[in-house]
Image (spheres, rainbow, N blue to C red):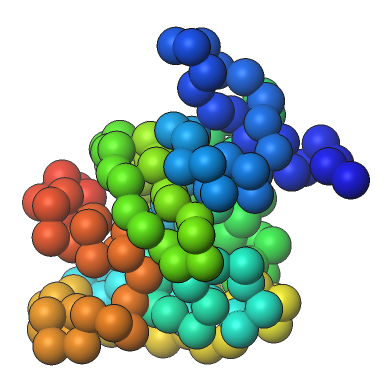
Amino acid sequence: MTTSSDLIPVWIEGRLAPYDKLAAHLEGRRHKAVSVFVLDGDNVLIQRRALGKYHTPGLWANTCCTHPHWDEAPEACALRRLREELGIDGLTPVFADQVEYRADVGGGMTEHEVVDIFTARAPADLAVAPNPAEVMEVRWIALSALLEEVATEPERFTPWLRIYLADHRGRIFAA
């Protein structure tokens, strides 16, 4: 049974419409998404996705990424998922860019996303309390070290993080 939180904005015949999240991925439909990068100087907070996630379990991703609920503003979505996934409150996400990508995420699913990307500056005392249903591990890593790890072991990272770093790094981390 589909709940309102499972309905995401999907383009159908050129217009946005509410659509089941899982069906959107199984059908490879173009849909809206939100990604956040929490930064502390040159360091980026990344997360390893919980093993129970329906796609890309156990892979490293950016701080958080998700789909807005139908009629949810991107910034509100970013704040919601920082709280739900990582227990992070009190940050101010700043819009960095909008990108579109298409990637196979396994299990017969395709992400075809139009992503509003946000960055947020972390205070030195940022409290992080990962939700184990969403996140199995977090770590801070220098952007240069992350780029090196992704280049040498790409299979450990989500397709979208690899795409963001390869194709959109300058626009995401310019601020």
